[in-house]
Length: 615
Figure 1: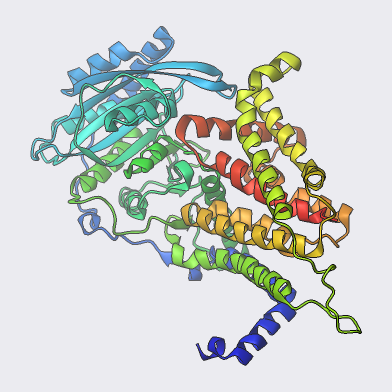
Figure 2: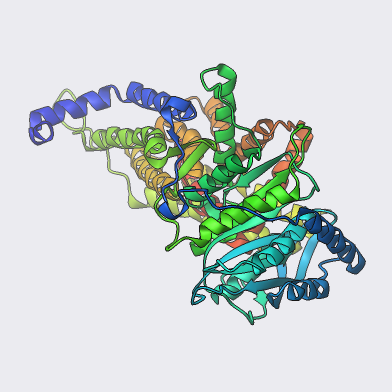
């Protein structure tokens, strides 16, 4: 405190920070990147452990015996699904009733804002079927959910068969203290969204659905099954949910504990555990696993049906079966016993899962990185913006230079007008509003004038508006009287730098992965842009580090991390698909990534683009 309260020392500190501003910023950037890359090194991470006492032991005895019967049920389900050309609602109702459940159905419909070409649908109509096993030893105030989506073709039939087999087995047990809801939802995430809205009496997306006739207690946890093969080689747990939300870490720990007990190979991001952490290949494996989680979380989309439960504060995950070329095989009986064990431990909960972490990264199922370890990496990037803001503030408040006759150069250092700062701010955000509104609302006009489909019209309109924003400097200077002053761009940059610091800070608190990726590309641009740098080279660097190009590079990087590299043409088509899916996720499920980029991140980037062409 003495350093800051003493005026002389304070001036000396500020002088040092401004004199060494550029080297300190470069050092902070390199340190932030190195810190993040070091998070995957095993000695720097924490071992996973069970925090919830009620789930601390796996000493329950799993006895599920009906794997073959579940397979027979799956084949019967597949036959009826093929016969009716969709979800066999009547057959599911009769089958669940035969297993002693209270069975109900829910109809829903949704008109998409534009056709989803990935799944070839526009007007979606479907029915959810769910059965409730009432708790025999409790007042029925709490519930658990086990779901399996009814997927097109031959996908996920085994998951529905296992769900019905577990329902029959659970019905004969007397130790359940919570209601168990067995849900088969149609049209994957859309059906799950309709059921959750109906269960909680909310409607946040404008979907039409019939009210639920039967309800259980307050949902404490949920699992979603994705099994498309009679035998599997490993089980993968999917954690990433809507807007980067993650379930309580104890849910992942519970899955790993029972996999170890039963002897099932388990993976995260489709990757097995490795013990050679001290080797280059072992560290590279951990980095790739962590980067896959970061990129999935940054996308903001739910990566399974469980992702929509998280917005209702329900801890949920998806268990997906993988059938690869490994020699180790697991049948449905073993998988059913794993699910049985997890539900018996969740049945013991006296309160919601809350004692473990909600913010974490996982380079493997045995180790995790808590928020206290990964947030300094972002902090080192964010402090660069504060240092640049301090430097700009010192330059703005410095007394004007004096001529030889002692008269201050008032005209040259004249204060910028309010319009010179407000005009770029207003135009940038109007451009962002156009980027948010025009692609969906003007798709019909684009289809009439150009030979493209509705989905292509939405994406190409978004790209056109984004590109048109590059003309912003010329439009700004037409509205500002006179030439841009030296003080004017400094004031604008000070506002833009502080704006970006607040924006990235708030984003990182909600979705660290998205905030960190944006900081990696936007902080260098914000820190070193001035009107005096070479225009052509700087403009190229600006475009490469823009949000749109960041997304394009992320698409190629994600495919490389999944060991599924794509060509430039395929990558471009995948890029267009990612943009359209991001817009759809916003309108269907409330994903915040698209409005965040369009209404805040892109206008902020345009402010720095304006500064580059200030003169």
